[in-house]
Image 1 (cartoon, rainbow, N blue to C red):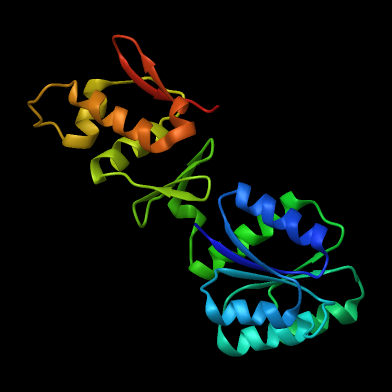
Image 2 (image 1 turned 180 degrees about the vertical axis):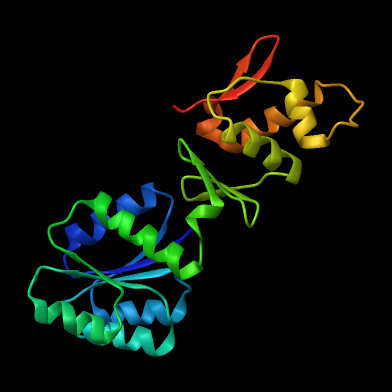
Length: 222
């Protein structure tokens, strides 16, 4: 779960960002001014800081400078101003990107996601994503939305095989061979046990794994 600090003196904007990002699986703390934002920043661990440019007590520029002195966390500015001088000043302070008000929350989310992944060194080439389920192939971690789910190494391998062959029916023998190798001499119904565990871990995305009677399973885009 990614953790974000949002500082904006406008309650409606602050709360709408919080609600939207939390619905996407983020953990969000909010502040009404730059001073309280810095207090939260020093007391907590975040993956991204979102700052309104024009705030009381400490404005976004000074808050960004303070964050940058203490950390290399990505900083995203919210501003109602579109003048070139403001953009340049923001980048000189150390911000990573801007969103100009008013903005679609979906755009803000994509920028947040991109900045965090860049900061954490997450390479999209090492990810497998289908219908809201994402596998980090380099770290062997699985996510539904932004929430990490726990899978055994074997469960991860089976889910990866299903997702790589999305919309294709894979019989139990194929799954066994991929996950255990050609020398497996047990009951092929062991696959069913692993699928059951994977579905439980996927929660609301369990429906992506379809049972094909008398054959096997298929990961479907839904």
